[in-house]
Amino acid sequence: MSADRQPTPPARAAFDRKAGDYDAHAHVQRETAAWVAEWLPPAGAFASCLELGAGTGNFTRHLAGRFARIEAGDIAPAMVARGRASLPAAGWTVRDAWRPADADGAWDFSCSCSLLQWAPDPTAVLKEWRRMLRPGGRHLSGIYIEPSLPELGALMPESRPFPWRSAEAWRDAFTAAGFADVRLEVRTRRHVYPGARAFLRQLHGTGATVMNEPLPPGRLRALLRDYDRVYGGPEGTPATWTYCRVGCVA
Image 1 (cartoon, rainbow, N blue to C red):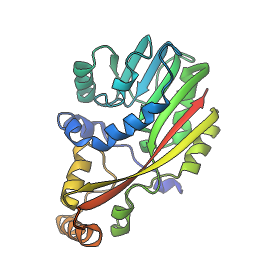
Image 2 (cartoon, rainbow, N blue to C red; image 1 turned 120 degrees about the vertical axis):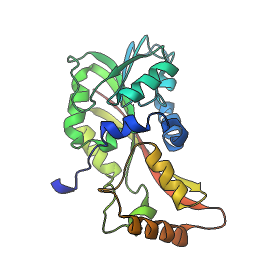
Image 3 (tube, one colour; image 1 turned 180 degrees about the vertical axis):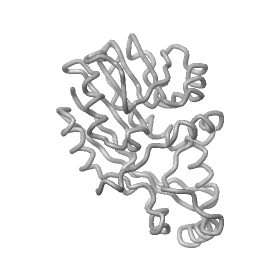
């Protein structure tokens, strides 16, 4: 992937604006969180846990009871406020996952879900995350990877939707960052909506964007029409996601 194709992380303001509606639209994120949580360690295996990009707590709720200390961080203050209100047992902080200020070896376990695919430089970010873990500490991430949303990509060659990385590219990034025993598993899920408009409404309702720039109204109408025409059927209109869970050792 060339330097000019690096994905841009969603803006803090976008997530702040969507905080009140996020949970109503985040069914893909909840499903991903439940799947990634299957790889969490048993209760008591690690004392402290840092979650990065916690949002409103879709993954945080799976951490409860497993660690003596849990800190859930997100860059959007409104997301943090909602997470703190619904899951007060965790410590909640506003933090930038790409530029953590934690001391070396500060955490036993770290995790993220539905976050790392936005990293502008994954290897650099992962090096920082590894630095925060004690030797032998563990990390777990859930990521959306290639070929997520292939239906949308096929209909938008001119806008070049979000350039998802492959599973192999993610394995390379974790290895280059110094993580060991990298374990990776991929799952593809097809979600069906009443129509293309409902799918895009759900996607934008989370605050995330997979397009490099907003579409002009005429192009958007054409996209919705073509999406339903090409992919729609009696059961509805599909959108396909590919999830990846990665576990590794610092």
